[in-house]
Image 1 (cartoon, rainbow, N blue to C red):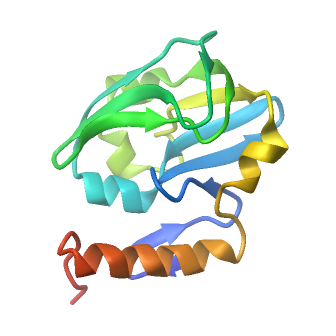
Image 2: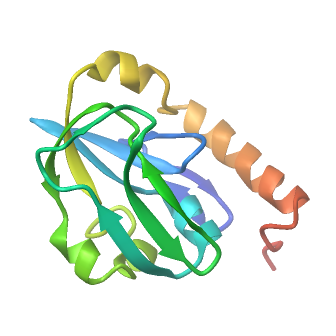
Image 3: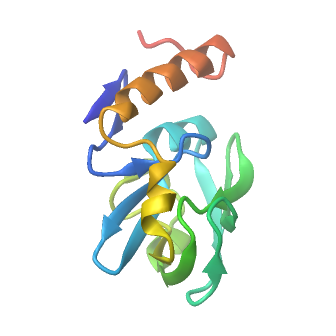
Length: 149
């Protein structure tokens, strides 16, 4: 597991370096959520809107939106395909993103149409620790994260 300060990123996931979304490859689809770094940077999540199941979504295009204390903006698909499932729990209780980012707080499951190519653009394996370290330093240098005491 990649870890820096109070951020951790599980090894079995793929990560969108820009939008801080995680992707878990499962039989029949790719489950998508917001990583711990993204949720902490955004603040307390207040509202989530997601496209319905059955909708096509392109990699890098919005499948929904999120409103939090420090962020309002799109949730962009780390892989392209068709939305197979939407998580009703996270819609009803958006704060799950802050309390269980890798469990109950997933957003959608996407049936991918070009999985291998889409995954090639995402951080995975040993790249994740290097990326996390860089993100923490970058956010700190911009004053967006406080130093750990």
